[in-house]
Length: 355
Ligand code: IPM
Ligand code: MG
Image (cartoon, rainbow, N blue to C red; front, side, top):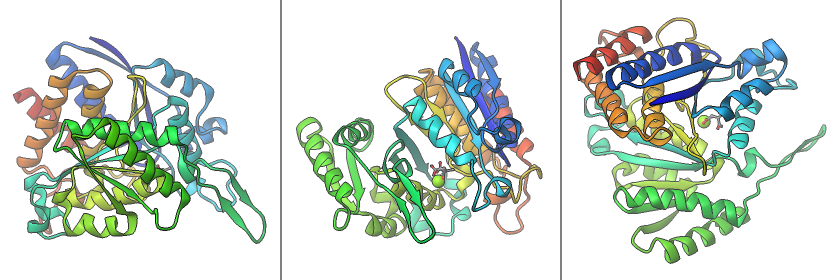
């Protein structure tokens, strides 16, 4: 197959982790006889510096024309002054909206050999395997914003249609897994959450009676996630709760640097990015963990290109690289030998070749 991938390296460690991801993608290409054309576009803080806009028109065009989009990370102190007029994050929110990728899948699976990398006890982590489905193009991140000297306002809005479609994505996913869906809201306080609970209940009852649904309030969910994480299968929630809970959940896998994500809509084209940020504190040092990006490419192969064997092969290669002992500093135990970003990419590539 031939596929066009738009590549947005972004800022901070973005370029470093994307470079390793692309080497692995091309490794899959040669092993399975595919041609992946990766075209870079300016995005985020780097694009603000070059053009004044975090999402320049030709970047958006390139993304809309591609079969899939790979993103590294964006942001950094340079563009975060409290009075900044344009921010890299605005580009990312606009890109998600323009691509129509309303469902953000964030799988969290503990690799057994990394159990020591987590701050949680091994017995709590045994058999963690869950997926967050975060609503990505609605809610408070997209509502009207206002500010005067004394008051600031961020509006949170959800429509029935927005909740219906994200519920369906999560329920279909649960059907392929353990048929358990947990919907997270704050319906004891928020009107949007009461709508969320009503709609998820109705859709599940009428269309997915074979999937068990339970509702958990977001504050309790934050606690249960680290108390009994193995009980969860698929979790569906609104934009901001999903943003917060998925950073928390990354600790179940050992490091934020390990977690991939796929943002999907009704088209096949998706946006794929590790869930970590641009980590300006370690940028340029060659120590960032590229695994979140490499695993995001596995999701890209599976969801946008329907290359399931290839996705499985890449995930298996990452697993074996970790088992062979390759550890970037974020997942190394005290005193354990660490490898660079590049060497972690090399370890995955070597395992890919070994097949
Ligand atoms: C994420 C990030 C983004 C978000 C930021 C960078 C806008 O935290 O993808 O989780 O809040 O969605
Ligand atoms: Mg986040």
